Each structure stands twice: as structure tokens, then as C-alpha cells.
Image 1 (tube, rainbow, N blue to C red):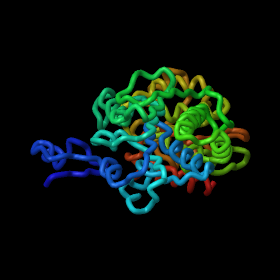
Image 2: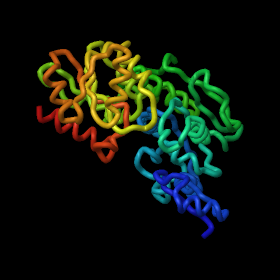
Image 3: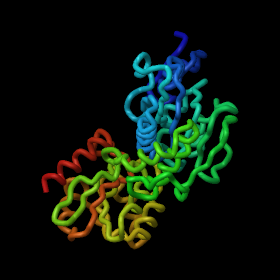
Image 4: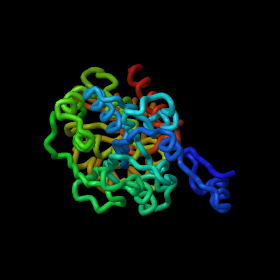
Length: 353
């Protein structure tokens, strides 16, 4: 064999990939193959949190500007799936995970966006430096005519693209419909990227005002007896949950916990105290670690064990005007197949109240 193309779910140390490398066989990620099949310009989006929301928001921006676009990559549709399915003049907004970027070769986004970078997937990458290096590969093949969009004050990145910085307090063409400071940061990054490809502020403003977000991301499921129930199952690491806590007023009730990823919960506990969380309901294999962190910050909690009991406990405690938020800060693999299944189960439980 001359070439091995692997799915992003397959680790680099998997036997077949390791055997290929030991024999000098080239190993590519699926996005590397896709980029070679497609002549289209790519706008790549990576980061620890907010990738899918920002990618879909950028798709809406292109559509508001009446520019042909396809959204693909980690968001759901593989890049190779676009071969023969779109015109050569369409832009591709490609969400990129660290798993996809660790095996690129010549992959080169004309515009590359890094939203943020905090510890995650250490169960796969082993250490933060390896995770960071995989993320930053999004920039390494960029040339002088390309654009790198990074958070304000971020360290220099590989490649030689023009550098544009963004921050959550940037002036925007319109205030985003999505709640939360973290979503304003996503909107600022999307605005910078859209301007870099020549899209007008009027089109950007239209998309910011109308884009309502995605399932499992601060999704209002239902209001019952004056209590709002919100599904943020996509919050699979502490930083994502921290952003969600800041989107609501004090008194929030939050369901936390799931499978371990090797991350610390100290920052989440501090944010819970600062945000005025009234009580946390803990589930899954990480419950004890989260409990220890919350106790150190004086945040009240109880061990619910599983999602069914957590919803019942929150239902018993909640009063009119409260928000009950599922924002686990963990992966879902201890009790669910993925975050979608976890979020869907939460929806079912809330709709049955």
C-alpha cells in the first residue's frame, strides 16, 4: 500500500496506523484527502469550544450574503462527501478537530480561525502541548495571501498568513441572538473571518440577528411552572460549561458530570460560585471529582447519580423563575453513546414532567 487515510476517531498509535508509519507509508487524515479532491477555497474553524456554532453561523453569514457555501468537517458531513456535490466557486466552511488536524500534510485553509485553546482530550493526546500542537496545524501551510484569525493577545502561530485578532468586546455589526459572552466571542470570530473574505457588514448583521443556534447548545427545551429547562449537553469540557453558567442570572441550578477526560474542575467550581449557582446535581463517573471542587468553593451540590434522578431532584427543588441547566462539563461515554443521546434523553425527561 502507498497511502493510509484514517478516520479522525482512530488514534495515531492504533496498530494499523503505527504499522504504516513504521514502513514509511504516508498517513493522511480524511480532511487532507478531501482538500485534495476539492478545488474550493476553505475557511477552517478550530478551537476547544464553539467550533460547531461558529461554523454554522458562518454558513448563515455566507447565505445572507448570497454567496455559495457548504459547511462540513467535524460538524457532521465529511469533507470528502462534498466531492462532486458543490460548484467550484463555493466556499467550504470546515469545522476541524484536533483529531482531524494531527494528520494533515498540505491542507491549507485560505482563512483559518482559532476560537480558543484550553485543556481537552488529554485522554487521547496525553498532554496539553500535543493537543495545542495539533490545533495549531490549521495555520502551518498558510501563505502571505491567507488569513489567520486568533483571539486577542494569542501567541504567534505557524504559517505566514495575515493575522487578525478578535475578542468578545469587539464592536459587531449587530448583537447576536445567541445568549452568553462565549457566544459573543464566537460572533466576533465569525465577523472577522467573514470580513476577511469580503462579506459586507449588512449580511453579517442579518445572520447575527437571526441565527438561533443548534440543538444541545443552550437549547430551551421547555418552561414548566415558571421554571426554564435548558439543554447544553454539548458542553463536554469544563470551559464550555463555564461559558454557559455566565449566560444566566444568579440562582441557576445545573446538572454536571459524565465520563472523565483528564481535565481539572477547579475553574468550573470557581465560576459556579461567582455565577451564584444555587445547587448542582452531580451524575456519572466524574461526580466525586466535581463534588470535591465545588465543596472547596462552597457551592451546594447533591449526588444524583444519573440523569433521571438529577432531573427529578431539580424538579423538586426548583421554584418559579429558576433555570435548570444541563451543562455537564464532561464527555458522555460513561452513561450514553454521545452528547446527542444525552441531550435527547434530557429532552424526553423534561417533556414528561
